[in-house]
Structures are given as structure tokens and as C-alpha cells.
Amino acid sequence: MASVLATIDDGEVEEGQRTAHRFLTGIHRPMEQELTLTELEVRGTIPQTLCGRYLRTGPNPIAPDPASYHWFTGDGMVHGLAIRDGKALWYRNRWIGSHANAAARGTTPAPGPRHGPSDTVNTNVVDLAGRVFAVVEGGSYPVALSETLDEQHYDDFGGSLAGAFTAHPHRDPLTGEHHGICYEGRCPNEIRHVVLDATGTVVRQEPIAVEHGPMIHDCAITARYVIILDLPVTFSLAAHLAGQPLPYAWNSAHRARVGLMPKGSDQHAIIWCDVDPAYVFHVANAFDLPDGLVVLDVCVYPTMFAGEPGGPDATSRGLERWTLDPVSGTTIVDTIDAAPQEFPRIDERRFGQTYRYAYALATQSDRRFQSAGRLYKHDLVEGGREVHDFGADRHPGEFVFVPAHEDAGEDEGWLIGFVIDERTDTTELVILNAARFEGAPVATVRLPHRVPPGFHGNWINGGNTQ
Ligand SMILES: [Fe+2]
Image 1: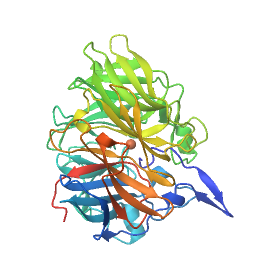
Image 2: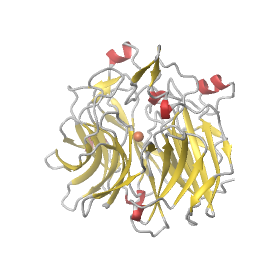
Image 3: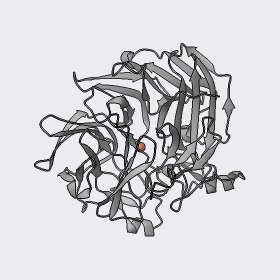
Image 4: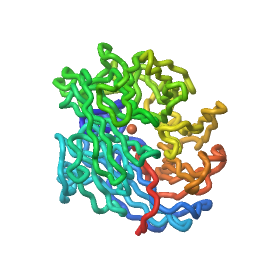
């Protein structure tokens, strides 16, 4: 996920006389070509109101060495599928033109300023103030992408970004601003709260003092606060000196705490709430309660990177509700669903506010971050969950919610994502009706190849989709 700063699993499997990396083989085997496909088979009926592109990124290394490769460090490749007037117009996949990737391919690197030792960008694709960026944490500047993905340039938001960015900036629907918590390994004593205004310019960069160089993958907001996940996975000098691809490790000496930073304030106003040691990659949502407490819904791991170097040592313990008390500085942990799951997403119009529905990818209990072939829809008001099962040998990734229209209800819309069919080595873009979650897809767009599992994607509304 980060250039050298994040990993979950680099497990290796023996394959004959050589060692084959789990994330270079099977459904993870990288694509070797950039494709432009326009004759796409559609089954079902694509909703007429969908006009835009589904973009998703992930690692797709061009020349990996299985002995040292790490899934989170692979060259970024963005996949795009454009839809308009009920038709699937095109599919394109494009590598991000980092220096290393361009050298391996004999092409020219994407232009623009660089930051940090690596310019690999492979974790998320986001719309920031009407522009599309590929983003990564802990290292490179973002990469601005044209509509067809063919034009790319590294961009520090017009010179307004002072350091590393985040893979998970969050738009505040109440203000139009975007918030992120940013870190980098060379600054172990300081992270930054970065705010972009509605034009995509950085307008605040507040330093926040920390210890040990914590890995902070995501953040949350409420109407009142920015929420900082300062949890005990921290930079490991020993791991770094040992040449491990992930110089981060579980650190039981690090105080696990969640920060409530009043919006517009600086670090001195942060209220820190202690929490029992655990790790969180992804936030579903957060919101303020009338009595001043703060709710934070997260996918949680009991530990992370506590055991064998370079690999995961924990399975998701499920979706949890953490209730933060800014008066006592404590956290109450309640389990919403103990089944392993990841990649929680919601109706982003509710981000930072009360909400009812969260969607997540079921993961296997023994292979971390590996799809269990199902999606969950959680009803956080009435309780319970629905399950969409894609069937045997089919592997969904993260699914994103797209409202049916501007004033649509919270689950009135579509869930969109890629599903790999392992038996045919192909992929479908699947469109589900979120309100009839367990029902058959309303439409699928078939791709004649396999899009390897990746990290994050989003639906980008509008455009000419040329
Ligand atoms: Fe992420």
C-alpha cells in the first residue's frame, strides 16, 4: 500500500523447485499488458442513470523478484470501465508511470514533482474537487489521471502539499473539504492532518506529535472532530536494518489511542481516548452523539505484524463499534459482527454523520485479506446483516455504493465492483441493487481477462467517457 511502509501478507508457497509468491500466482498473477477494450458483453440492464467510470487500483508488478516482492509495494495499475446510456463504453488498464515502471517498460515516466524514495502509487483512486488522482500513503505525491487514464502527472496539489499524502482522504459532505492523516517513515515523531478545500488546494497542514512512527492508514471525521488512529503498529528500525520490506511491527510499548481533534484546531486541542491495543486499517464511518460521545465503526485486528516478519499474524476480528468518551478519555468496544471482514464502505453522503448501512467484503479466516466470496450489508439501526454470495471460485473485491440520484435514500442505489471468476480466469464488473442486496445482479459487464485483486476503487460521476 505504501512504497515501503505497509504490508499485510507476503506469504510464500512452495511450487516445485522454486518458491512462488502467493501474491504473484493464482488469481494474483499480474497482468502483462495494457488493454483498451470497447466491445464488452453486458448481461442484464445497466441503469440508465449511471454515467461515469468505475476506477480501481492495486499492485501489478511488471518485473517482480519473488524473493523480495511484497504485495503492497507492487507497481500501481489503474483499471477503468466507462458506462453511459446503459452501455459499457470501454475498459482500460494503465500502469502508473513511476520511474521504475517506466524504466522496466522502456517508456517515459509520468511528469511532475516527486516526494520520497519511491514514486510507486498503488492504493486508491479518488475524486478530489472534480479531479481524479491515484494516491498512496507514506511516500509519493498523488498522480493526476486523465479521463482515459492515458495522461498522468505527479501533482502536489499545485505546490500546496508539503509531504506525503494519504491513501484515504475523506470528503466532508457538510463542508466540501477533504481530510487526511498523513505520515512517513522518516518523520517518526510527527504526523500531519491535511485539509484540502473544495477546490483541491491544501489549506491546512497541522503537525501532530506522536511517538515511534505509527502506521496510520485511514482516518475518520464527524461534524465536530477529525479522528486519529494512533495504534501500536510502528516503524521498526530493527526491521529496517534487517532489510525487511515492511519496516513496521507490532509495538506493545506504544500507547493505543484514538485522537479527537476539533476541526479547525491544532494538536494541543486533541482529546486522546485510550483503547485496548488493536489495529485498524479501515474505517466504515463515525459520528457525534447528542451527549458528546463519539461513535467510530471500524474493521479491527487483535494485533498486526506481531509475529513472523513481513507477514500477517492476525485475522480480522470483525466490524466493531468504538464509542469514544472525550470526558473520561476512554473507549467502549462493542462487536457489531465478529465474522472476518474488510474494505468497509458506506453511502459517502453520510460520511461523518449518523447512518444505517455499511457494506464489507467477507474475508477468509486463515488467509488475510483474501475474499471469502461474499459481501455483507449491515443494518446498523435495526441490526442484522444480509449476505450476497457470488458462488464458488468467485472472488469479489471492495464494492462501492453509488446513489441512484442526488436525493436517493441511503441504500437507494447501486453497489459496483469487480468479481474474478477463478475457473475461467475472467472478470465481471458487477452492479448490484443495494436495496435488494441478496438478489441477482442488475447487470454484469464481462471482461475476457482476470483483473488481479487490488485495493480500492471509486465511482467517478460524469465525464465524456471518450
Ligand atoms: Fe486502504
